[in-house]
Image 1 (cartoon, rainbow, N blue to C red):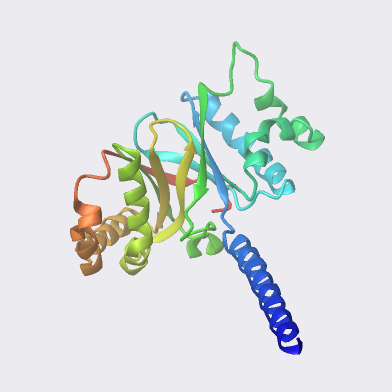
Image 2: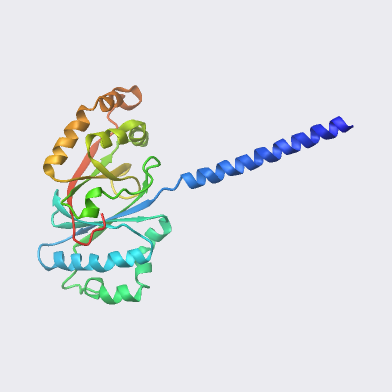
Length: 266
């Protein structure tokens, strides 16, 4: 009888320990999946007053976003690429809902509404922009948080490359994301490029797709670092692996070069 009671107690204790361990593992997993979400906004502009009006608006908008816990915010002008002039915003958040309801929340910020009046309430005969497009992304598990370039802290000259990879199928898209997590991050770092973020498109045009941003001191460094990247032995090995090289996993690449605006936090 005592033996049966001992075994029952031991089994109960073991089960309780296992349950506690399982709850701890789940909690740890929840903490480790600490990914950010990003909203990228493209403001299509016309040459003339819209350019300054939008830049002035960004100077008001970024402090308001900071009050909402969204920081650091990147503000950029298109230097090379189609559809210039255009400005871009990169807005990080820990909450999808906060990004989805961003404009509604901004409208409740009295200080913002007052300071943003010229842009926010621009008349139809003299609009502040041609059109605004936005994309919602989830940070990659292997790069869960934005990384601010070292050059930003010193105010050094820098440029940014915003690259979007479109895939011909969901399978190919998943394979390409897997490729980043299988060594491509390390190749970027060895090449000298400074990654800012990597994001999987949740809502946007031309899906399935992913977007990432790199930072460089100038055009010469951009070209040199990409040459190092393409010649890296690990990159060549990754390309040759059957699970990545069985077909073209990327069907189109959009490549933009951006310059930071004065109020940018990136």
